[in-house]
Amino acid sequence: MIRAFTAFTGEIDDGETAVAEIMDQLGGCEGLSKNSIGFLTCYSEFVDSGVMKEICDALPFDVIGSTTLGNAVRGSAGRMLLTLMVITSDEAEFSIGLTEPLSDGDAGALRAAYEEAASRITGKPALMVSFAPLLLSVSGDFYVNSFADISGGVPNFGMLAVDSNDDFRDSQVISRGEAYRDRYAFALFGGGVTPRFFISSISSEKVFMEKGVVTSADGNRVHAVNDKPAVEYLEGLGLKKNADGTIASVTSFPFVVDYNDGSFPVVRVIFSIAPDGSAVCGGDIPMGATVSVGHVDCDEVLATTTEAVSDAMLSGEAGCAFMFSCAARYLALGYETMSEQEKVQNLMEGVSTPYLFSYSGGELCPVPSGGDSAVLVNRNHNETFIMCLL
Image (cartoon, rainbow, N blue to C red; front, side):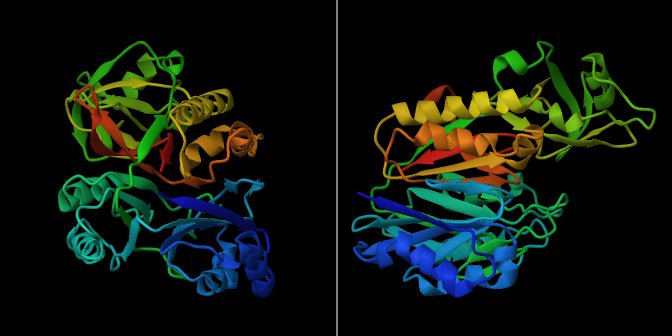
């Protein structure tokens, strides 16, 4: 059995006041069970001011997390906010890990951190909760696939760090009060924890009927669909090409990717159209995958978030809930920047489950495979809302 508590503060500059607010909401951390762990997300200035570190140093348990561009817990939501969820249990075990700096596709740093953290868990971990750095040289697919091999398929749920800058230059991962731009922090759960996962991205009504097959691709770059340059495939769906060869608002028209292996499709945001007509995406798309194109706007974001949260709440009681939503979904909200956070708060009003909601630069969440909901495969997602109940 687990219990969870949440707290928040908007005090960026005064560490003493921020610590007092957090400790007051947590009841001074009295009554915690034998094992406890904290998960924290915050506006990047909480790191710069030192307030994040003061809060972590004041807590009697390990804390991991990341910066974000918006977050919410019961009672507060916003951009310039620090939120914390504490999970405590006599039966469940928690062990945090932190990699050495990551600069390329070498999985050795991931393996070393995982094996060290797993050595403190009895038996095979039941869940991995991840906060990964947003790096140009390392993809979300590399993280997911590497840890799947290292862990033997332990379900991996989490997010890539972001911040409020357009280029996410201040995005950082947090571990034990320190912030890192190039390290991966995670927590392993053991002791009979049973996670439930929920995911929602683009409804079928918002996906073009036409499908194509990826006939040339390299990692996250799709060169050709149906033996035509990717840009021509997109033009054929009615998307307008600019004089410089780019496509207007292309980030609002992501690929929906079917791996053709029986697993749940994933969404890949299209970041840009390269001069050679290829599509540069937010994750790997393999050759032979079937793709279609969807459209995301404010109404679609709110509808799919409502679907996932409602399904989760109908699935049974839970001790706590993690919710991560893609930064691209935040951008799709236009001027209604608070509407998804407010929707989550409204949906959760009728239940007592503590929750932590944060925006992410990529979503890590297992999906059913082979048509069997009990068989999960870890995936990296874009433009998606994910949720984990414990």
